[in-house]
Amino acid sequence: MSIVTTLELLPLLGAVLLAVIPKSNAELAKRVALATSLVTLAVAGVMAYKFQIHDSAMQFVQSNKWIASFGINYAVGIDGIALVLILMAVVLVPVVILAGWHESENGKWSAKVFYILILVLETMMVGVFAATDVFLFYVIFEAMLIPVYFLIGGYGRGERAAAAMKFLLYSLFGGLLMLAAIIGIYVIAGNQIGHTFDLAQLSTLTIDSSTQNFLFLGFFIAFAIKAPLWPLHTWLPTAAKSATPGTSILLLGVLDKVGTYGMIRFCIALFPEAAKTFTPLIIVLALISILYGAFLAIGQKEINGLIAFTSISHFGFITLGIFAMTSQGLSGATLYMVNHGFSTGALFLAAGWMVSRRKSSNIEDFGGLQRVTPVLAWTFFLAGMSALALPGLSSFVSEFLVLVGTFTRYPIAAIFGTTGIVLAALYVLIVIQKSLHGPTTPGNEDLKDLNLREKISVAPVIALLVIFGFFPKPLLDAINPASQTVMTHAGVTDPAPKAGK
Image (cartoon, rainbow, N blue to C red):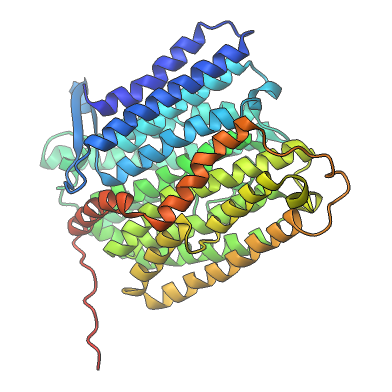
């Protein structure tokens, strides 16, 4: 059994163990969930240690017959891109559990159910990044909706039922388009190489340009909804405002990356010519996302809404890097996915603690927190600076690579994208000024700073923001060979440097 399969099964086994714990024993359920997530993280560390970073081929491969009559297999394996995303996911899960120790207390169901949903979701997050059978990927892609729907609808706040339903309907619509495209490519494969869903074999098919364009759109729209990319983004602010901080971290930090990961793994790998055809349109959509998300973030009065719109802008940068079709852009986009997961995670953690203490999500209500809750204020400040891509913090490296990689092929797009950095300074610095500095807003005088549990939970995330800001090499060493393989398969090379006059 592959270590990837072991990594998938561990959270699932933890969920089964939670199922037999009495629902009245919430404290035991929390401890079991945390222990399970830490064991999973340890196994992921072993997997990372054994991973051959200079090998661009899929590693830890396992393939077993699942539905043999249709050529469907349980097939998993990882390259450097999948590796770093899986590591990001398994790091964030124990952080979410420890930081949100009391998140399940106001839900419709018991704490036990809450943590079962979290662990089942962790299994699916690992599986969706590791799947090398297209049908298996689709099944996990759709199944992930179930735990997220119940996490938002059962444990969220405000209009949580409506937010959960909106998320579900958008995602199901995209999933149906993807299913239609999967059926189409399955039929084509049957006529050329025999019925199969194996990604490596499907990538060798010869598909005429018009058919390839339709199939590409089926996958791309599903991934653009998941990412989310403008104009298919409207479910995200509603979900982020209604979900608990922990759910929001997993939703924006990990699950939305399935969309941008899918663009790399499936859109470009299966339909390279169609990817080139639609690249100009996608770059325009990415630029709109960057600017639109930034402008709306500037005008937000509610803190979770602000974080949601900043993420729309960040996903525009990621998509821009992917479809710049350069090795720097693609590596930068993948690194951006990881760094965004940690910076957004830290933002949602700090914002969640601010809201729970102040009993308000209005930015204007948080004035002067640096005097009252200095550790919480510094946590929010560092997370905000990372979202701003301040040099020395992790997002700077990835944003720089995306823009440089884009500039070598699409200089005008890179210039417009750079405008997003200026706007990011506005939406980050404005909220920091309003919430952390200035006179202490009445009602904030007696707010409590972070306790030991909260400090322990956020410390690893802040540490990673700093470490990867100064030393991103371990991540890039894993990412670069896989990015080069994607580029080679797509039939594109980096633009040649222009000789100076």
